[in-house]
Amino acid sequence: MPASAPAEPPPAADQPRAVQPGLPVAPAPVVRDFAGDTAGAPGDVVCPACGTGNPAGRSFCRRCGGPLAAPTGPAGAVPWWRRLRWPRRRPGRGGLRRLLAVLVVLALLAAAVWAAVRFGPRAVDAVRDRTATPEAVLPSAVVASSEARGHPARSVVDGLNNRYWAPAADRPATGQYVELTFDPPIRLMDLIVHTGASPQQDAFVRQARPAELTMTLWTGDGPSSARQLRLTDRPGPQTFHHVVGGVTRLRLTIDASYGAQRGREVALAEVEVFRRP
Image (cartoon, rainbow, N blue to C red; front, side, top):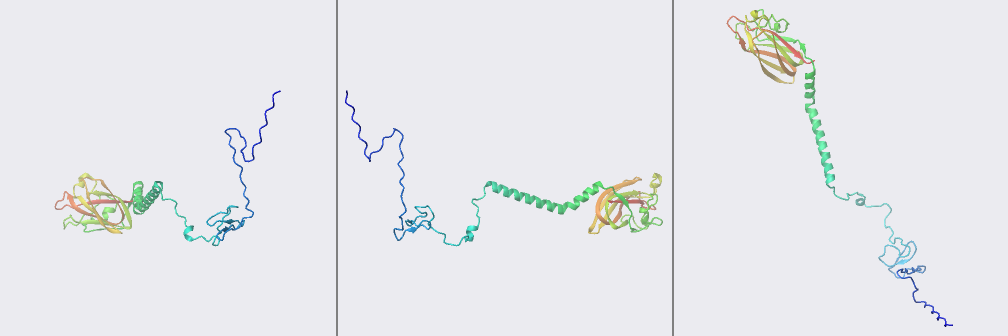
């Protein structure tokens, strides 16, 4: 019989064990015992939690990991400058755009408020002028610079177009006027003028007729304003649209006449005034 192979000697204690190729074995962790650790040097820092000595300069205990530096001040005593919340970064483009948008909105609101205060009453009046139906109004008083006999100033508002006012015949008609007073003041809308001595054509041409009148208005809160009215030489109403608020007096002054001759009177038959209700 063949002799048996000699047995391999056991590996020495300090020799590594056999392992499979490509599978390294991690070394076993070494557990260090800190039971007998104490502050070994005068400069060591003793952990307040476990009493282990630590070299100076460490922040955490080498045994338990606890903090080595204890708080020096009372709890909650934080300096005021640390309590301030400073912005972490400067505003970028998005912040600037939002700021500009807010400024634009504020500017638009301010402009809207200013426009409402400045132009609001005028806008309301304009709307009411367009939607309201004018109504006739009689003056509280009528006077004239002069009157021809039998043709007083009151004839221009008596509702009859076959009676008229005429200035006195002993002076030129140009510059003579008739004036209407309103109490309370009115918002003037329209003025209708009838010229001549009668609506009938044959009687109409027997007397002179105003060709141009200057309408002068007085208001309670401002100076007078004037407008020239050009009249056609025909019987019937002639309408003039003129909107003015707060009118207290209305004067019609003769500037020129049709058919003016010696012995003829300049006849102004009727003046109708319409206001906004």
